[in-house]
Image 1 (cartoon, helix red, strand yellow):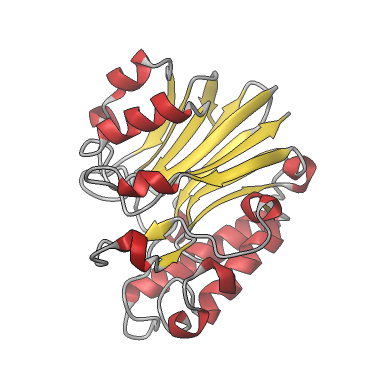
Image 2: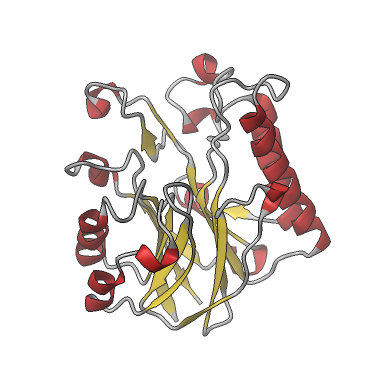
Amino acid sequence: MSFTLATWNINSVRLREELVLKLLSEEAPDVLCLQECKSPVDKIPLEGFQALGYNHIVARGQKGYNGVAIISRLPMVEAGAEDYASLGHARHIAGRLENGVTIHNHYVPAGGDVPDRAVNDKFGNKLDYLTEMRDAFHADKPSKSILVGDLNIAPREDDVWSHKKLLKVVSHTPIEVEHFGEVMDAGGWSDVTRNDIPDGLLYSWWSYRARDWDAADKGRRLDHVWATPDIASAGHSSRIVRTARGWEKPSDHAPVFATFDL
């Protein structure tokens, strides 16, 4: 079985329903994981997705904030949802395909603007969320699993437009990168995107603040596709659909794709 998966922080699934439909029509992933849906589950606009053959969904939602969903044209059942750091936020949902692969979709807290938990509770929440992810993977080693989402950390020097200038900017600080690495190590996760594209600058997010985001190209790779060691070698054909960042009224994130032969 071969299937293609995409992950995308959509920044409101209701506001950007047409963009989701455009991606599904033009790129046709078998599974699409969305973050920051900003919608209760019963308000997610499913009709258009279903018309394109995406008849399966698992989701967690809340009004106006956060929210995660996995829509699929492959049969899928819900496989749990975690509330790491006990924030009461809709930040994780898991779905299991018929081939036994579990897909975890995460929206890790952004962490606010100041990288100091003593003065910024949001940064503390982010570190706590990552710590609980790490501990959960230590306690229950995942297998035959894929983890995707907006993890809100660009870990490598070539995952940001300027390593030196962003060392004190939330998403690329050493303590965040350290926590990110501990989560990966705890689950034995493999970075599928960088396995496929090992070298060079690679971004999935560009700020709305840039007058011309494309020309300035001050991006960060905040969106990730991981796999457990037992299936990591089955992942291939990774790519970031950068053009989606230039669509009308876009999300500030671009979709990240990978294909798995399982």
